[in-house]
Image (cartoon, rainbow, N blue to C red; front, side, top):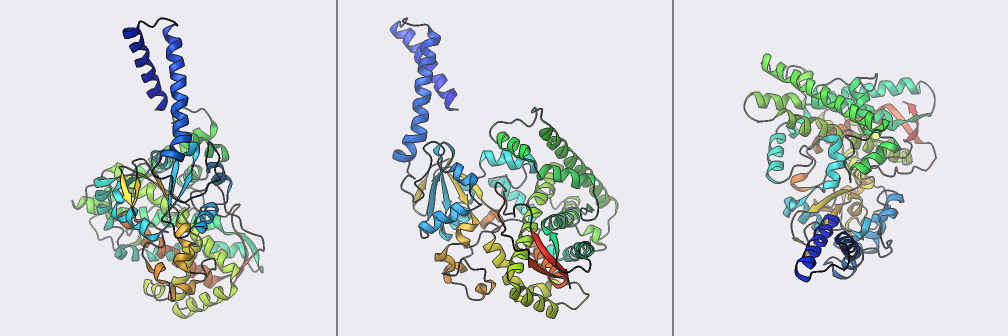
Length: 530
């Protein structure tokens, strides 16, 4: 854009010189090129050096001052452990409303650093902020452009259509599916462990397969069987989302320059083919399900296969209660849910097991509560899960201490004032859940300790509904929040009452470059069958 601006300006200036001054000292193209180079580099110098340091209305916002002259803190963020730099910046000024840092080409980014700032961005001025274009290219390339990327009235309409199927009442009906797949995972792990004491198991892969199967059945009524076998869908899905280093590089380049449609590399070809396979299989399944709803007018309560959320949506559509197009269902219901509800829940479960492996007394306490609340050889009910106080506190503490989402960016769609600070149109803000979750002014002096009991006596600041952002707050709150929380707790119940878990003794490092908090190289634990 800057290049086009300078080119147009140079051409205009040369035309003016020739027309009004009779300027013929040098050929036109040389004059134009000279003006272009001078103006382009002057403009870049202004944007990169002068504006952020001397002109920007954000220049006095607290933040780190040790950035690179050209790329700010971009390289440090790329090489640092996830959220470690952001938390360190927060600790330098924990009471600040915002933290300002400079990214590539010294572009200013503001991290929200107080519950009130989160409230004003996510609730009061929710639709004044949109998903940045680069995020749409990266995530939309995989998930399509459903409710994740709709804005304003389009988002409100999509959310209204999803509220019914994703209501707490409908989510509770899915618990038998959660229990069924959790028991299947327990069976698979039991065969792996056998009678061996403290068998080394890499748990994240099995949790990923389990949550993928759950999403398939509960959302689509689609049997993926990722736990026990391979399918065309699960293979293609894994190709899309388990990118190789080359695949990650292509995704990064595609965020800036659209190269997917023509780049002649094997990794790109495999991604494009996998994406086509996933979307084709999902479309075929949607059409089959739609035909079943039209042909068979029986209640969705008659069998588990029709408890899935897709069937509820298609039933509403057939009755004229909701006007969904096939593309909207594909983007808003199917691919979005796979992307948002699969990896993050599996990751949260993995961190829960990690925390239990480091805190044996908590593991025993949780197992004792589960054994008291849930009868042996029976599946937990919603009432039993909701009535287990330590289980619920433990889950909340896992989500606080190991915030699944790394960062969620937003861009100001217009000039806006947040907590008294003017933000010009185009300002990038970041919601980093770990910032509030690890802030001692919110959670108190024990913020760095893993302590589920804190939720029985929270400081006043931590009781603010905007003090924890695991699912984002406001009108854009994760539509699958109830789904994820019930699934998470059900999986924990089955795992804890069937296995004793211990750490292998090695430090666990976070995976860099992932959109969610994941252990690098997977999570290995010593597992013993009870």
